[in-house]
Amino acid sequence: MKLLEYEAKDIFKKYGIPVAEGLVVKKTDDPGINVCNLGDEVVIKAQVDVGGRGKAGGVVICSAGEAQDRIREMFVRDIKGIPVETILVEEKLPITDEYYVSITLDRSKKAPVILFSAEGGVDIEETAKKNPDALRRVRVSPMLDDIPDFMMREMLRDSPKELSAVVKSLYRVFCKSDATLAEINPLVTTEKGVYAADAKIIVDDNALNRQGISVNRDLTERERLAEELGFSYVELEGSIGVIGNGAGLTMSTLDMIEYYGGKAANFLDVGGGADRARVCSAVKLVAGMEGVEVIVVNLLGGITRCDEVAAGIVEAGVPQKVVVRLAGTNEAEGKRILSEKGYQMLDSMEEVVKFAVGEVA
Ligand code: GDP
Ligand code: MN
Image (cartoon, rainbow, N blue to C red; front, side):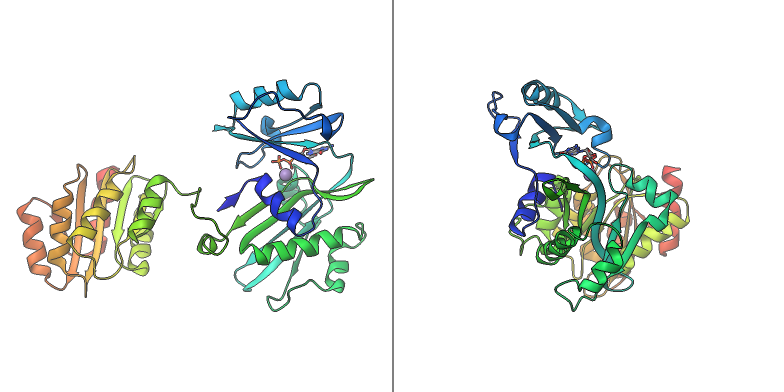
C-alpha cells in the first residue's frame, strides 16, 4: 500500500531524516489555518497519490499571506482526476541542489537495490530514459543492516558526503517499514543541511498487519471484500472475468486469454475445495465488477467437486454469460447440472477461452 507524503515523512522523522517544518490540513478542518510559524514563504502540497503531482499543479509555492487562498483553491480542484482531501503545508526550503535516491527490491537478485542520481527532481523519469548513466545502482546484501561506507562513496562519488547519513537512514526505513519502495525525490541540499523534500513509501501488502495498518486503502471495495472472503482477487482492465482454482491454473487462463487476443477484467482464485456457497459468491463477485461482459470458469476437480461448483454457478445466476470448463471429481454430474440450466460447458481450457474472446470481440 502506498503511503502519502505526510505519512512517509512522519516515518522519516522517526528515523532521523530531516524534513521541512509542516502542517497537515484536512478538507474538513477550519479553513482559517495559521501558517505564519512556517516562515514567509510556504509550499502547499496536495496529498494525492499521483506521479508528476508538481507538474499537475499539486505543489504550489507562495507567500504565507497567500497560503489560505491557495489552500482553499487546492481543496476544490483535483490533481489528475483525484480529489484533494489532505494538504501538507511546509516551510519553503532554500534549495541549492536536488538529488534522487530510492531503495527497492531487485527481485532477480533477491536483494535490495539503491538507485541514486545527482540529477534529482521532477524530471527524473526523463533523465532515466535519456541519460541512464546518470542513475547509479548499488545492490545491498540482504544480510547487511547498514550500508557500508565504501558503497556509499562508490554511489555518491563527487556528490556531497552529507547525503550519506540520509541514504543510510532511508535504508533502515526501507527494512523496518517492510517497504517494497522507499524514495526521496528530491533529496535536497540547503544552507541549513540536507532534507527530504518529498517522500514516498510503498509498504508490502503482505506486511500491513505487522506495520499496524488495518485497511489497505489501495484496494477497491470488491478487492477488500474478496480478501475478507479469503479469495485471491485482482482487478484489471479488460472485459472477461476469470475464475480458477489454484494460482497456476488461474494465471495460465489469463495468459491464454491474452494469447487469443482477449483482455481479462479481473481474476479470482477460489482455492482448493470450494463448495457451492464459495463458488456462488465468487461468481457474483467477479460479475459485479463494471465492464465484465463474459465470465470464464476454469476449474479442476480434485478435492473440489464439480457438482458443487456447477450448483454454485447456477445459484449465482448472474446476467453475464458464464462459460465453464470443469474436469475431475463428479464431472458428469456437474455437466448435467449446468447443461440443464443452459450453461456453456466446454471440454478444454482452450475452448472456453476462445469462446469468451469471441463473445467480446
Ligand atoms: P512531486 O511532483 O509529487 O514529485 O512533488 P515534489 O514534492 O517532489 O515537488 C516538486 C518540485 O517542487 C521539487 O522537485 C522542487 O523543485 C519543488 N519544491 C518542493 N518543495 C520545495 C521547497 O521547499 N522549496 C523549493 N525551493 N522548491 C520546492
Ligand atoms: Mn517528488
